[in-house]
Length: 366
Image (cartoon, rainbow, N blue to C red; front, side):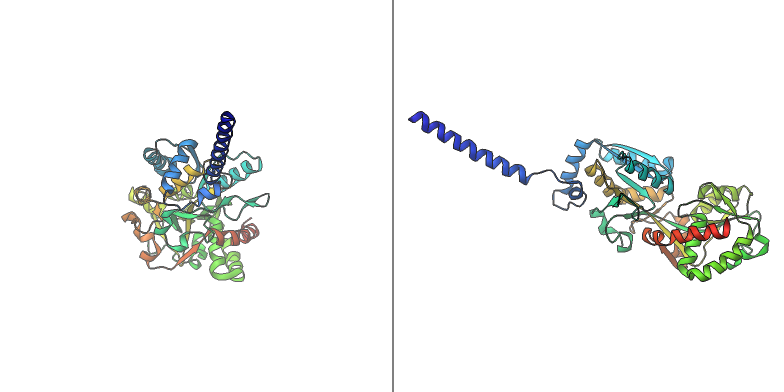
């Protein structure tokens, strides 16, 4: 009888222990990727680090120049988190988009993060390719630099202008407005990047649409088309290089800081900022289907942090963190310093206007 009682009591204790263990397992269940990306608990840093140790890696697709910033930035991240192996692939915005879409359609996504032009308006099989996330670093950013649905946060800015060769054009002669570009003396002497990303021809047309509307833009483009602008299948930076070499005298829709940087090294180059100055933000985004959400969020926190933003400043990029100053030789490119209005082209605005810009480019320049 005593034996039976002992066994019965033991079974009850085991049953209670099993229930307790079950309850504990339920309360400590693994977080979903979406919960990890938006976790705000007081133990957030520890949760992310513990998870990242298990994941061991993070993969970023970025438009940053490798030796100038992408490699040093990832090396600094690895130094901070030596248990995370950082992989990266560099391409322009269109190349990144094509790569991500093709991988998602093949169910073979490699990247966790994209840094560059926004991908928020694109979808695969009806599902958006990026997902919302939250970071304490958001507190340092103006509201306009974070997507309303938190699918992107600005990491750096680009300001668009025109570049010209100072060996052929003096500062007084250089075009100062869109109307000045219609002067017959510039016919056959201008070039722009002809591609599907937000630069060169498309950013020029998009800026006109945003400020003038379709009717006035079409009227202007009909006149501009007579100027025989050379469409170059090269990067925006390479358009500036062609201008410096004298192949063309003027580059349109270029990143305004490139001629300034080249001029500081002795090249015959200068920038003109048109009114308003188109402003583009490059951003960090988390891809839908990330396999390393903990490590991805640690990288998000890092790239938006002041130390990483200071690395951007040193590499002559325009940091998004308002507490980090722009490189001194580039300060006058920033609209508020130049005293020229800014035209902010968010990824949402670009997504809205770019299809129309493509149609207008094909109509007037092809």
